[in-house]
Image (cartoon, rainbow, N blue to C red; front, side, top):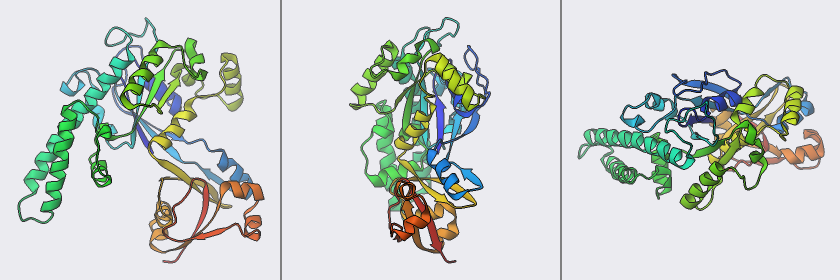
Length: 374
């Protein structure tokens, strides 16, 4: 899973990137302290892997990972050349989703590019810059397909259908609407996924608060006026908001490099229950409609990330193309059943192992052994 991070300068975007990835990307209290993209890989916390390692006495544990890409802050007018953030938008076009860091704190030592704190205005600014960037991308694609799609040529009908769809998309963008909010068929959505449009990608919103306001993280209805305005705006727009996460990025960054005991002591001192970063990684899976299946044995236990609805044969291909090509069957047991029985052998003796064919839809927590012949 790959997530690109966007936001205005001085929103705390690079600070959050450092906290998530354990990196030391430059983060300053002045605009454009990030002048190049930053890339970091994060292991997805999964307690099931530790349990399986002990059960199988496995030599290696390989968790699922998330790649985060942090680019320079966007400002109003980025699409027209203002600031430097627009130069780096190409780096996040290949991302699966976006994380929008929104400033929800006051600090006179950290200037806001627009002079005052207004999360709704900031969210609208970023949306507009992404919309303008997508408009340019779509217009170029329409022109390219038109040139290549001559009457009587192979694929003419498909090309005309793509042009018709892209013209609808362009009109939608010109109305200052996000592509992910556009009504379309599953076939049209599948076609657009290859277009790498920024406003078609799922978006997670992170409300970045000050360390003095960290108690908001645990409040059902935070008293922070900025968070309230974010929620009201998104609720009015979408009817419900699932993807807002409250983080004190500066506090989380301070924990980078601490061992487990030090983190526990620090969290206790701050009056915090736990790190809030795992919520973001879990939310990324949910927003992108992803899940994990597991493989386990003496050599390694491992989590594999796949889209919900993936068949057994396609899950096998996630491991290696030979497994997909020579697929015979999938031998499996669900994690909860395995833990309840205590061992793979006990599950087998109890008749709880299942044999599934190519079309079986893999479920979260399935532990699978693929049988194949090439």
